[in-house]
Length: 91
Image 1 (cartoon, one colour):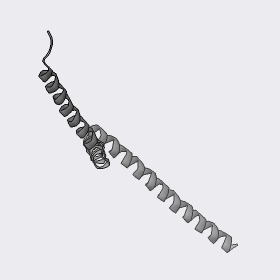
Image 2 (tube, one colour):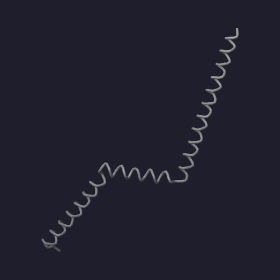
Image 3 (cartoon, helix red, strand yellow):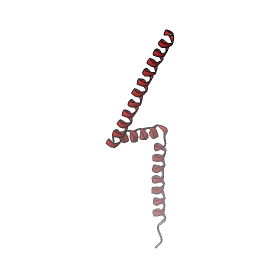
Image 4 (cartoon, one colour):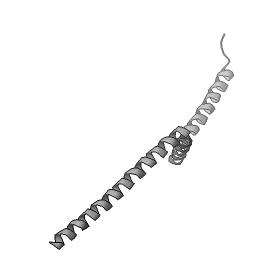
């Protein structure tokens, strides 16, 4: 069954409008501002995950422990150096 030329033209126009709409959506999504906003939303959602929060808390505790250990060791070394200087000065 042959299609009427008017039907074909309407189909072509409808397809053009759909394609134009799709291109507009793609252009809007690919703007740097929108890409940054999407990334921010994804990271925010990821950080709200309880598993991620537990992992980050564990990392925070580990980093704090390392810093405390380093400070304590530094103070001990400083005190040891003071004692050595005092002993050498007493000679």
